[in-house]
Length: 138
Image (cartoon, rainbow, N blue to C red; front, side, top):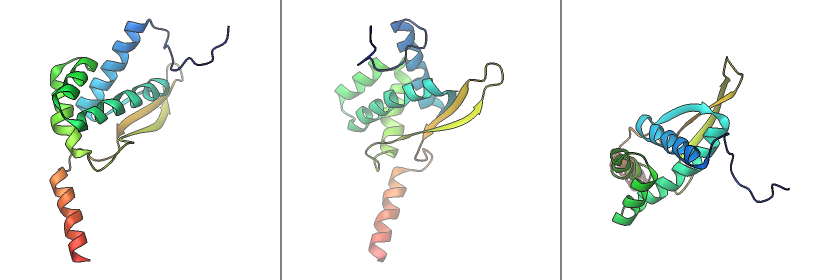
């Protein structure tokens, strides 16, 4: 049997366990801003969170309900839509960065840090105002 057309890794888990793993990694990334995990898990969680960010930037009720369904807690879904998504409006895609870090000491697994490309501490209004003032001065 061939493996053509099968996307994604299984992580030696059943489907529901895999989905729960990706959801919990996405939840931790939204709460903390960056997480460190193994490289295959980082590569699996990045597109999942990218899709959530795209929905959150739309910001309507339907998108909010889809995000609530894809995350484990309602509070992190509201945090993504209300706090994080407005700060990422200047970018259409590529919101996350995967940086390879060290190998884990016990099993030599490759670790990676997943974090947001843009700083989440900057206010979106201040960034937009800075761009407008630069254009006016030129």
